[in-house]
Length: 414
Image 1 (cartoon, helix red, strand yellow):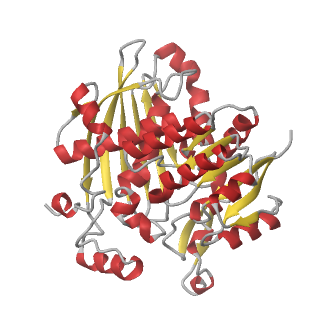
Image 2: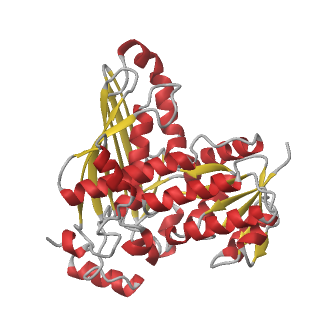
Image 3: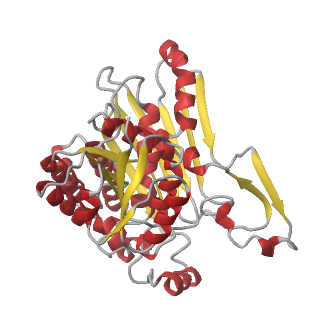
């Protein structure tokens, strides 16, 4: 099997994380990188780690012409424009097999549908990058519990939480460019993870039918005057005028179309988790059995006292989004694999090499976008949305949250 030549469109934080994951996957290399921001650094990392000798390209078209597949890893507000350029490149002769896109597929349902339409128009296989569904922690637990599920019945409740102290980049804090706040940023992870845990063995990722959603959004830390000033000074984002939520929680009810059973997924996400660093916590409850995951429980710990703390200026060498450089610290020696990035790249490489869609394709990404937007709508309306109601379904197709329109102060400061 020859190497799949992958072009990177985006060279920031997530691109660098995925490059680390690629080291652990066979039959792939980085062939080209769109020349923006950290592209030279990413190219040098690729060369030093056996990931190829990528070209730095001045256009998306050039990246496509040098690749078998491309990854869209650029900021949310650029995704549709990038996908249009990819589709145009294929029309003009680029011999691409597939395209992958980092979550979320779109900031709105309209954008996500456009991404699907363009991929179909270009005849490309697709991969929606939702890394948490590829986490070995989840899938090994599910595999262990399949005999119990067969004997006792399926999970009836899943809970998923992702929390850290806040994003790296200014555009992530900007609700208009990002598409919202923490619900848009990380709620997509948690909603998808709940659905995955609840899905019966052997069924398609979209098997369970969402029937209702309730949600709440809040601005608990970063709306306070001293923290608003921090954001304005560091990122140039003014949460006094255009805030995004730093906390969200909700419940989605799913129906098993074969049995009629209703199961529930509960999600909670925040940008105000000032503990060790990024925490992903999940559990699933079934009749007589359960599973539980907490990524901050590590078999490796280090201790740094006050006197030695000055020697550990980069806290994130120990853990993504770490906020501490001293004390007892949890360390993950292979975060790329822990969080599922290695698994999602392996799935994409194998799928595209066989001219197939990945386990999670753009259509799945569209469905997750729709559920995230339904959660925003439910929070705005202060009610439980009936997702089987045709009027609600139609409203969602063109819905855009007040927060993503820059009007978050109207609801978050009430």
